[in-house]
Length: 316
Image (cartoon, rainbow, N blue to C red; front, side, top):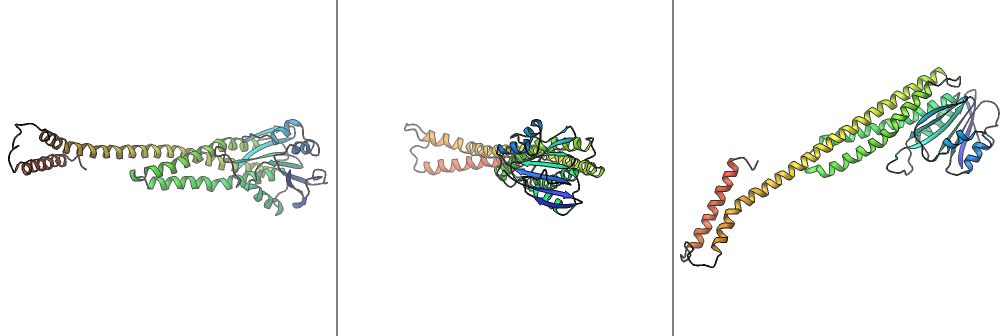
């Protein structure tokens, strides 16, 4: 188990070791744990004194964004980006937060990029209460996700500008990748918006009016991103269908060219096959100029058939 702790008093943050941070004295305490070990549960139950119904969601392996009020505090689970390797179907790591008046305990299994931003907020003296910590988490996570979602939209714009049957295979791979990422982000952005809205409406004096306003703003931003990824998903589906149509049109065109070539050579094949029979009675069979005549006839027929297709605009 690794982590850090801060004691905040009069907007001054003091770094503390995790052990003994809870009983460190006056002021607000923020303890953050990065762990996958079972002994984190012992610390949460023992030194932190949390009941099982709080410890279990703080250390659960599978989590979704949510917010639940317990007694005088609240449990909040949010999802944000991480640089560590994740399952392709689960592209966001979670941070589980227990907040009550005077202390905040956060737990992660992967290092969130938002953690560094929250630490800077604390160290700069802009954090005064538990509401500020959660607000900092919500703001940092949404601010970090916003450009990523915007980049997905830009990637889709580039694909739309390059729509062409010749690039269908490469574009389909790009569009599929964008669509998969949009679906993965959408899974968490909608419940995250609901969790932030619920948190902003919770009763309790540990959440100030400014905290509720900032949480509502973060919820609005999450809602906007959720709407954007939904639009990206729908646009990706339309582009994928367009690429499929372009590919089918390309295959139809190639099939048409092959059919035209077959139609040009069909009468020629009949004539050459007929004169390839080793029987008596074939026209001009004994004439010395018969070969030149038959070749000339084949050329005339090929030109005539090709000209007919050209006149009918089949070769466009």
